[in-house]
Image (cartoon, rainbow, N blue to C red; front, top):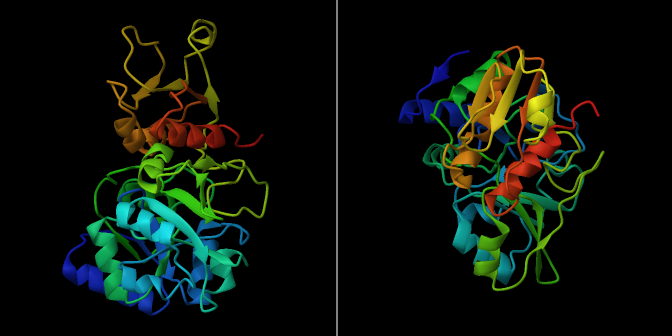
Length: 324
């Protein structure tokens, strides 16, 4: 499998593959997705097979326009419309009542469907040319590090995907925020590239953070106990511990550049200046680099849990629970 430039001819080729029941890996502003026709249960089943993803974990359906939204949901409320106007196209996923035409395999049998409109131009063109909403989780083996470059997809799933559209690095580098409105109250179900504070400003009301960990039957993607994990064990560490550990074949994921950096075999810095937006964009790419080094362990320092820091820490906490 080779990477294809996202020119018009290749986007049409990829769209035709989706129409015929195939899978396409494509860039979004968050991470690369593995997409299939959301109305084709057999095609969607190939996503689960390729990723080795459990069928109880629902998928996000991607649309290219508000006109396409009416094909997937029965109801779109006033607050949902207000938030969609503010954040679509963009990294906000809304949990909505699903139409019967959406197969149960997409929603894990739930009566709701997760929907978003990506802002990446390649993704929008692909969905539009395919003329169908596209169900698409991240294009990586289940539970592993999410891909933010086409090379990440090729490395992890390349032999199982016919087309990978290479759109370069993902701008945001971290998955979408998932939001559900219940009785007029917005609940954040997964931290992501849109912060709770940004949602509150647009909604005009308090957002409740309902971040759950589920061993099975999650309400949304990204709620399982262990997720986003490198193959190498990931462990949190503080400044005191740094002086008392073996660093010979260990890696270090630093939030920012320190005046004196510890002498690990391999160090990746999320943001030299400590900028949370840059840190979020670099998170998965840095984890991929560390995971490719053949290390015995990766140590990571904590990120301030404010704004995008909450989304970064959510990923790191779940990644550290592999095998626990």
